[in-house]
Length: 634
Image 1: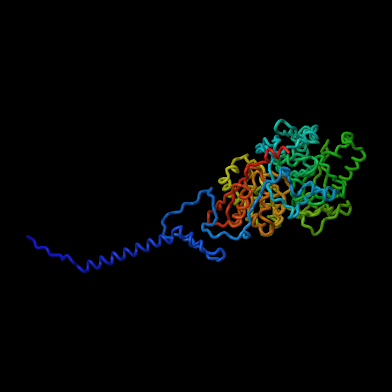
Image 2 (image 1 turned 45 degrees about the horizontal axis):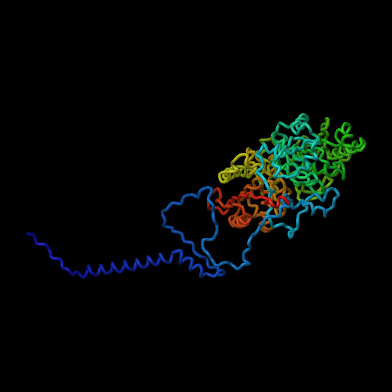
């Protein structure tokens, strides 16, 4: 039988080790529980509550650097919330301003701040100066939201909207009576119908444009941008769109009630404007074609100053088309209730003014007369002493056109080395014009903007617009939007990326921008205007389906109140319209707080390149609301 060693029941070394183990375990457990207690939410709130609001002591934000959990990229439509996760005592009531924007009275449903009828009566009626822009002073600015009329409906989709507008959206029947014989507009049950007629084209705008096309080439893409002065309901511009010609139509807010408003509801580019004493808000050499069809502008008066302004915005080699009095007066003088002598005298004065601008009269056939601007001023300068041409303007920027007085002097074209050369550079025909390097860039006219920057900007906006469409399904839905506004357009890349969609974009170059790029936008075959966003835009409420802004609030944050800009955006945005703004995150957080107070639906999303960029994207949608039924009856 084997002998096994005897183990004593009491071993001091074993007992000592067991003691150390128990003590260590107890202390570890205590410190672990203490740590959990210190990092619990309850203690965080209590400790934060003890920090004084003005102490400046930051609350630490802890990250577990030892975590092995992978972080998935945020979904595209994530709603980023930049509100504080830690709660300090409320600041004193005066430290933060509460925003409140109640609805305006129903009588303001068509309010246009800078063309207000009552304010305009304070100004000179000579040369229609009272119908120019006269904006309210700061203390006169309204702090309420402009309502849509009761029964307002989302406009028809393009191209149906060219021919139909809901009556509830523009409840004015005056033109259906005043222009009944001229086929402008008809009222049918719950809508207006636009047959395409006009004072000088009773057979319709399409047939009228066909007549013009027999005299000048409208098909080869050499004519892309046009301006219609005194446009009526903009049927001329509406029917040019199918021919790839983009027209800016303008007319004053006058006795022809709502004519520009009708144009916008039809989905046609238009602005409230008048030829009076100020330059039109467009750069020089912007339009391939200018048009007046019985627009009632006194072209020959005031030393031909209005024709001189058309010359400034007309491109070298561009056309001016005139129909209506006094053209073909021999046939129409009785119907116009004018004497043959007065009409002949009026035409003679216009012909003389056109010659003083070195224009060439191409043709006069039936009710149409067409003049052409020279491609350069070489010949004009050589013969001006003999032919008594008007003097050239000196020391004047021809592209400056915001609150700038018109002049009777001739805007000089850029110098050329050959009499056949096109001043400022020849443009490619459309659609190549869109992506060709604009002459203002290729010739170095814009400081710091190169051909390479232009190409990169074009590609950048293709990516950005694709990202927008992934976030805003309505923008991706071709036809849901028609009228678009870009508040800070730079080189027009946003509009260029949407050129294949059934939309048009009004490109804004703020007058405060470092570089005046509106001329480049027109050289691309796009349209736009100048604007100071501290003032209201020259348009009716509910003009745009969609508003885009790139860094526009950073540009204006020290110039005027942010809420006034957003109120103006709300005025010109249609119910159920959308907004996309991109800016610094701190700026967008402020914008969001104001937009929320206006009852917009808002969210902030990451930059398309990811969450680590300070620049973020704010998406907003204006809710549908109208004047209450009770107020609409009064």
